[in-house]
Image (cartoon, rainbow, N blue to C red):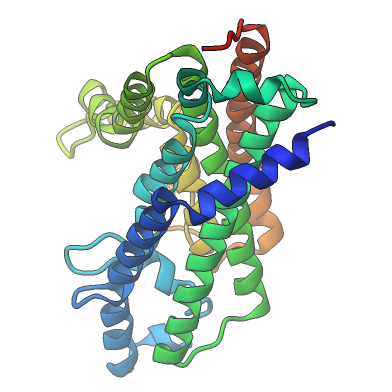
Length: 320
């Protein structure tokens, strides 16, 4: 495709060396490190359990606890990535990808060169995905290196592969928010309008959606068993519409192999099971469990990309 590599290299360089990219990377890096290594971070809890001689030190997947353990008053690294880091990065990279160039007149000059229109859109989207992959990989490697030096427990081969899957799935999740931001960038001419629309959807799914579902189908000890199971089923079904909930469930199963999805918990409760099956899920069973969630995220991302791609290809672009 003519011009795709040129646009990709130009956009990737802008994302990585621009002040916006440097400030964004520094912000997410410092926040992620503080969530783990701060005074009330996850590392303090892990150290306390190891020094106390608890059974935690003999369990599997100790290294992954760096990413899933919450500190006192601070969220875990996993929660931070799911709710804040990836959505903010995706929105920041895509909210002005198209309309800013339209408003400045550079898009018409760019298309006057021997570069196809689809190469411009695809190059911007691919550059955003690669930027998020680089950012996630860098943060994971840095956190892993610091954690290795401070807890003295190296990751096993399965833990390393699970972290690799986390990076891949985090990039797919970031592509969802990037595609959504680029969709608004194509439909709205104003940059402020597109960023407000993107942030509004992010805040709705991250904060208000769960509270709204909990209000419509509350779960409390005062409910009968039939009402309790019915409300749990309603919440699980409704949360499938939230990309934040989907990704959080996926990454929890990957980084916490002993965890079970909400659907599995509900099935055990319906079967009147009082205890969960012990042990962690093998990697193959983990992938089978989260496969529907991954397909859903990829499908929604493809829908955003297809709509914005079609609108961009049909738009009339004039020199200004």
